[in-house]
Figure 1 (cartoon, rainbow, N blue to C red):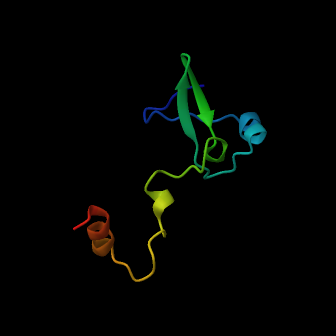
Figure 2: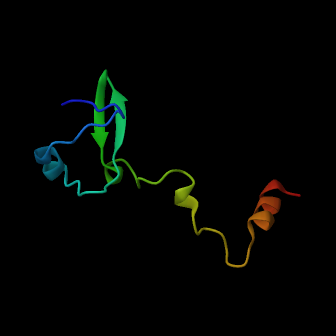
Length: 74
């Protein structure tokens, strides 16, 4: 495989099919024991970053400012 000037590589079709990675999917990379491992987000958790996973968790009608004030105790 060649790496483009943008640092991109193409995942071979046989690997995409084996891992069931459809077009426009998100993937992640992990480094372990000197190897780089391609990880599907659903394989190692929800695939959401720590902020995305909190989306929609506030009670209705509570503003961000009100929530911040209540969590800071002031």
